[in-house]
Every structure is written in C-alpha cells, then in structure tokens.
View (spheres, rainbow, N blue to C red):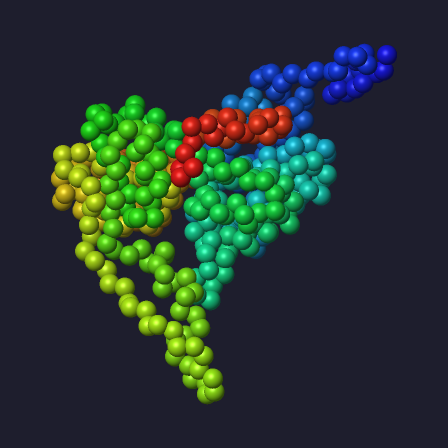
Length: 383
C-alpha cells in the first residue's frame, strides 16, 4: 500500500480507492494557514480596514514597519519570515495617493525578494482608475500602474468597483473586481424609511446602467439626468482632435472629411418623474461633489422631498464635506474602501457601510483555492 503525503502528514491510501480532500470552513490560524496579512500603510486611519479584515479571518496583522524618511523616501521593513507563504497586502488609498502607491510597490518588492510564494494586493479603491482612457496627448496612467505592480511582484489583485471594468485587461495576472452593491442595497432597505416610495437616479447617461441594476433589484423606478456635458468624459478630451484640424505644412492635404457639427449643451433635463419621491443617486465614486450638489438642486426643483447619494468610494476631496453640509442632499452613504473619518467629522450627513466582510471572504477563498463565484452571486453584469 503506497504512502502519500498531504499537508506534511503521512497517510495510507489503497490503489483502488482514491484519496479525497474536503475543504471545510474552519477558523485558520497563522501557524497552520500558511499565509500572512500585512498593511502597507503607516497611518492609523488606513490600518482600520486591515484590522477589521484580520479580526474576521482570526489572524494577526503581519509585523512590518512602513515609514517615510526625512528626505521623503519610503522604507519598509518586514519583521517576520514569509518564505513559501501566501501574502496579502492591504492598501487603502488616503489623500496622498502617490505615497500610498510607493508603499505598496516597496512592500511587494520586499516580500518578493523574501521568497514569498504568492503576493496578493488587496486594494479596495484602485487609484488612477479615472485615467484609463487616452486624453489628447496624455497617457493611460492606469495601465502604467498595472505594469508597475506586476514588476514589483504582485501575482493577484482584489479590488472593488473599478471605475471601468475594462481596466482588468491592463493586468497580466488575475483581478477580482468585487461589488459593494449588496451592502448598499441592504442599507437602502434597512435604513431609508419608506424606500418603496423612492426612485433611483443616474446623474448622467453614463451612469444609467449601474443605476438600472439597482432599480431592478429594488423593484423601483429609474430616472436619468442629462443635458450638461461631463468634461472629464467628453469627446473633446479623448484625442479625437489630434492632430489639429488646421495644417501649416504644404503638400498633400489628405482626404476631405465631412465637417463635424459642434456640440451644444441642452438645458438639464430629468427623464422620469421624481415629484413626491425619495431620490437616490447611484455612482461608483464621489470625489468633487459639485456635480452631485447641482443634481440635488435640480431634483429638489422637480419635487423630490429627500435626496440620498450612494457611492462605493467616498474620496470627498477639497471642500466636499462643507458643500454637502450646505446643500439639499440629505445623506451621503459610502463604504470604508477609502478612509474618510476626517470628512465625517466635518459633515454629519456622511454615513459609512462596512465591506470588510466580503474582502475577508475573498482572502480566505483565494488562499484555500476555492471558487470566487459565490461572491458574485446575484450580481448583475451592469453592476
């Protein structure tokens, strides 16, 4: 009877009966699990999510030191052996985005040179995700960042609600793009009184698919706002005017193409009846809040008596908290993919939904080699 080894233990297995391995949901500890969870950020606000994830997993946060030297350089010291183990690096992105990126790159490279088996980056909000298209003579920075992460040693990424799903194609390794919509939908059902009288609103036609997904699952109506062009997504900024239309060189002038008519901004229109309803604006990122404040004013004029904003990533840059506090918006609900405790102190209208549960489960499944399909159950394609 041959002897086979499973997990370092010897067992007798007959030739006629194949060995069977069962994967049960057990609370794993560091000594048996063969994995570590590190935080790549040195600030207290950014390590809160890492602590919540490790508490759910039943493991301790890996011992490491991340700090900035006096000349601004990032230094990382890993204080324990990681040889042959799965390493998960949790990196939340604060306002200093570039420092956070360097912390992640330096830590990944340090773990790679320490002979870690797999290095998985847990990046709930992926930075530079808005720069995923060519703008005039600019660059696709998101693609550059994907190449840098691969070069540093990352072999897998867990993220949440990418700005564009096509960003996954920039990577040469697997990317699990988790969804926050189940948590936000649960908040709507449990925390918004009379949510059955609500209507889901897309503040631009580009956000209509995401809003439609929410509306269908909540069995609510849908309204779409349009009329004022979004400059960051406009056709005039995507390189279609390059090279310039006027030519200064002599010689062959090329083909005579039809003259394109210039766009004119129509007045803002709301397609859908929001009168006497609760308006819930759905989006993936809330950063500069001027567009949301303007949309709330229009909805208020159309008769909406309460206005909520649901977004996955609450960056809330610059004077965002003050503008929200002074606006017609009743509540802004975001997840804890990005630290925003300071903004909450400035604006009590900002509420937080915890998504550490799904991130912890993703870590557990990846380490155990289990399917990730369960985490995407009942998730719409357009979500």
